[in-house]
Length: 454
View 1 (spheres, rainbow, N blue to C red):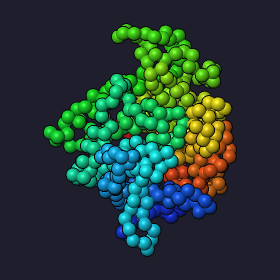
View 2: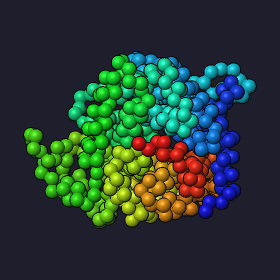
View 3: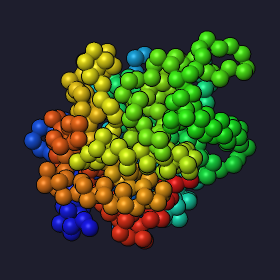
View 4: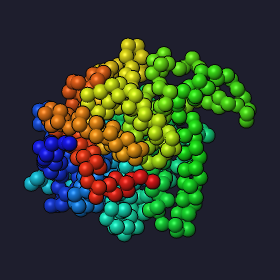
């Protein structure tokens, strides 16, 4: 049972972090750390706001979520010409900042122009769509989604993300640093997290985009893409002992329609750590997949979202949670949840991350532990009937998080060290604990969470 003072501390973080524009709440600052936090942590990040928004919806404070959704649509007009070309209309900002109290001005958005590496945020528009659906289902305010501005935004997102590219895969191609893992980590290509978000976005569009003659072509194409995407991910991204044995015995250089090894994966790419680590009753979605390439690393957020959104089949969802249970020390440790396992080190770290000191082995996105993933883990555990894991994960984290002043992430193989560069008073760390608690203790809160289940 989580202590009341932990919840009170978490709520205090959220309340203090609320950002206002023209007297209305429009979002939350990423962190309240005044001891040297990066300047952009004063901004509201679209991705970070989602668990905070779930808290506000649970607390009956839907006005801040509505204002956030509307402001993001308004900020689309701020897209600038970058590197000599126009930005796509469907792109939404990674973050925005509002003028400080007493100062005049308008909110300003970052579409990747100020980001490290100047990479555009592919996932922001997807999170906006998913949050819009959660808001509509839990408030009944369908009229908001049907306004011309929102309909146009949904249409632009579909047009952007369903564009034809020079490949045959139904999965979505993105560069490194275009989603939660926002620095170079060797995840360019078709990372699992993007595929889960893409799937949820396509499903959301089927519900919220009005079936007008103008939209019917988009809706029809998205239905076809959904069908191929789910079957492709469930087959080719899935890894259990049976599939591992198949890959181990793959023949390469196959040609024609009868090829089994359709992506020409070489058995020699199977990493040594995997043999003996994968339990017989477990499995997971691999982190990335492309021609001649499987990234066998376990990326927690992509797997958890695959369960929550229904991209993983029921038996696959069960085996993913079995993997967490069987490999608890590796994937959870003392501070849930490890974002990626295992960490890359040595020469592989150098060429995978570009020798990024922030992504040193077992730190940040290279094997660090992220409390913000608690809400997704708890939801996935409850969804699959693993209530004991949901309880265990919250008990493992909650009191230490409060004592450590709500860090952004933890370092080390078991997550025992506060992140070397972690900001404190991180809002989505606090929000994740509140959502996790409410999902377990308050049956009335469950519909809010289930609204992002398809």
